[in-house]
Length: 493
Ligand code: NG6
Ligand code: CA
Image 1: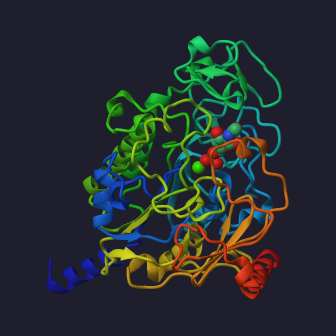
Image 2 (image 1 turned 120 degrees about the vertical axis):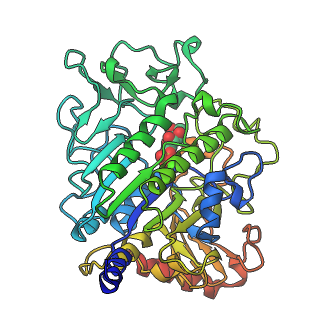
């Protein structure tokens, strides 16, 4: 090959569109991985990723629960605009498939797209018949391939959905799902506790599948039941296959984990890997999965040209419905790091989560970044990365923070909305939490969680009070008013 040909080739290789992989862990807290201070479990694969890129210290899921966070990530819009809240397992798809989405944006740039993992954004357009083609769903939203756990591990139906169809379904044993009443022949948690691997609260005590009682009832579908302990291999293999098949094309892989959501039933390979019981073992399992997928990128020679984002959909929770000893075995481990609250909470730990970005071909300035970033910003930032111009009405809440994703010294947002059961705003040194006038759901009020829902305004000065202990609202009524006005303006946008 002549000199000029070689130069041409390396220019082509250099300019080749990067692949994008988004690892989206479920309920992983700021303090839950080694590179963010965890000692009770080791996470060598995630720590290696952090050492190879940028470790963010002020990055946030857009909401403190799963469905709203995922909604915002895939649409670039706040969940409150569509009343997106935690969904039952038989809910219709809450994203309008006729509107722009993150995967459609990637397809415009010529990407192959896939989602492998937990969905929890609803499926179908009303009643879902699990025995026929289940749609609209991810394929209609712009994913070329999908392999899903349809809702959550603790919700029926406990089957995998590949593209439009339930995997391994026997037509003579059709599936029916109900969130209203008991149906079918399966035993239930309230009556047959002797069948359970973990005892559960009333909400999680309906149909028993694989020794775990779930939320909701399911009839039929015996041959299609998943085995929770197989998740690490099933999902990892599907992601690896997608990477192998599409290694030559630029691709976007969205990999939302089931881990470390309840029920936490890690494979025996990971049992005892941490000192804090199954919650820690599920973290070890999640780290292993992350490593295997990264190994595949490396084996294909495409790791350097892949932008990887590793983060979590909301903050940490210990007791989320099952007696799995997460509380009793916690020891010194602090899942939320120095921050107050956790999953469901308006305080920082509701949304402030670990976030790591790598992209060896492009990131020159690695290390820690304190840029303020919301996952809602992925949409516009990744559009910038792949060169797609967005419509005016598209991803209206998403900001372009691509410079900060590629350089640890670059700033992120100036202000940021946080969604929980109320709204909160970060601006400069301030964190303002709007008063909550609704009624706190019983299941939340009864939990040992600092949800931060108060009828009066809260204002914290994070520059001196990172763990939101001293409410300054009464001392700074003008700041409260100003920040509430900013929230009102964002809501009206
Ligand atoms: C809650 C469930 C909780 C969990 C959560 C969703 C009860 C009492 N609690 O309603 O167990 O499933 O929903 O978690 O039912 S999330 O990470 O998907 O938002
Ligand atoms: Ca979650």
